[in-house]
Length: 110
Image (tube, rainbow, N blue to C red; front, side, top):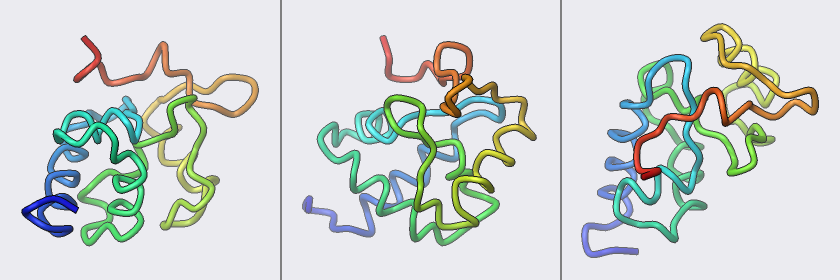
């Protein structure tokens, strides 16, 4: 991985995900870019799958680039992820994807 190792990367991911506001989502690639590793979106997913602080690190707010939910959401599957997002008033498209135009966290998108 990088010089600081897996734990350093994972902790940077967790710190960034903690900044995603309630009612908004970010994509795996967006988080990777924000932590300075733009080609590591998949590693962001790995980090969130082993989230050491569920309920504190809001990993449910991270979705695929097209707004799809994670089929392997580690804390109850995509149904649980959708319920958590709906409880924060995140809106969905008819096909079940998050409406990124209405709910995407703008950090790093400039």
